[in-house]
Image 1 (cartoon, rainbow, N blue to C red):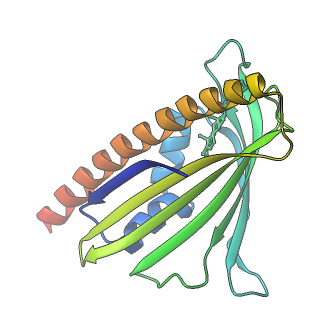
Image 2 (cartoon, rainbow, N blue to C red):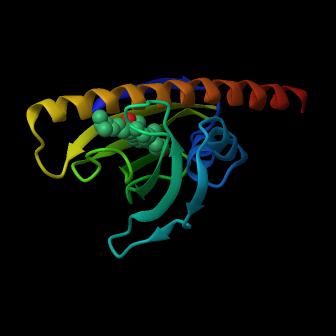
Length: 177
Ligand code: YK8
């Protein structure tokens, strides 16, 4: 996978997990900014192997006229069983976009690592990869890969900047206590 985000934030690892992977105000605001609508999230549930899983469905807004204006998407997230609450979280996610051209050929795999650095600091790393379910013609493949990378890059750049804003607010609020 390619590394799209790698940064230390001034908040605890559990706070970062809460922001990104629960029904937090931050997650709702971020979806509004990205014009993600019709969001439906299942609760986290433990599977027989001890991993936690949840599924998300939503409609994404796309600004590329070649691709369309929007697409339904489903995302399956798995919190690995060797994650340690407050210390270390590993979430794998698979995103399927159902209404873009060649949607039956590919999906995106995202891997989120949240590592605690100290009580009030954590590192967030996100890797992404475009995966193929069947092999398209080489020209089509490079078209899909290019368009996916630019979309993914844009998304995580914005996620980083919104997280920095959230961090500033959290630390300001903390300073007033
Ligand atoms: C998740 C990867 C590809 C897709 C899109 C499709 C290009 C089609 C290429 C052919 C539109 C929120 C993306 C960016 C949509 C958004 C997805 C998001 C950002 C037709 C030329 C949605 C993370 C995520 C993962 C993959 C992204 C898609 O939390 O280019």
